[in-house]
Image 1 (tube, rainbow, N blue to C red):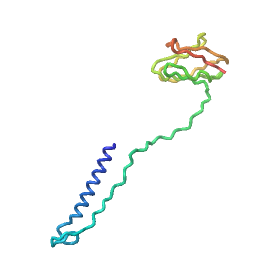
Image 2 (image 1 turned 30 degrees about the horizontal axis):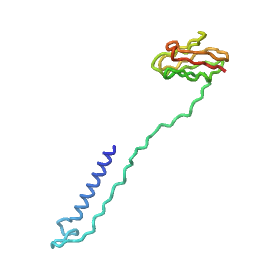
Image 3 (image 1 turned 180 degrees about the horizontal axis):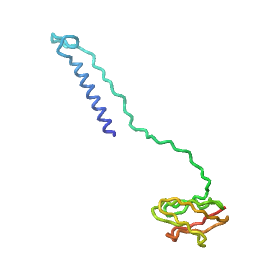
Length: 154
């Protein structure tokens, strides 16, 4: 982008210089610029106008963002990077929403096998399960060695 701006400036300067040179040299007619008797005239140098400088950066336009929406469902678990998040803000007796941002399937499974929720790749799924307040150790059945946590229901 910088080279095209530089080229445009160079072209403008060359044009203005050529125009000024043509004016300073005069023409062959005797109507004003040159003298026909061969003597030199001392014309004032032509003034050159420089085009206004083009901005060096182009402002980025961004779409307006909508205000964040609030959901009646506080039980939102997110799976991303082979990790569960949102396990500590759960409320009792509310529908669960699980968003899997990974490219592979995962589960949110209770260690005591009281629930197993499967989350397909890049999908959000809702589950209805009544859980009493307490702590529930969980894991992913697909990746049990690396995906573990504790779901805290208040």
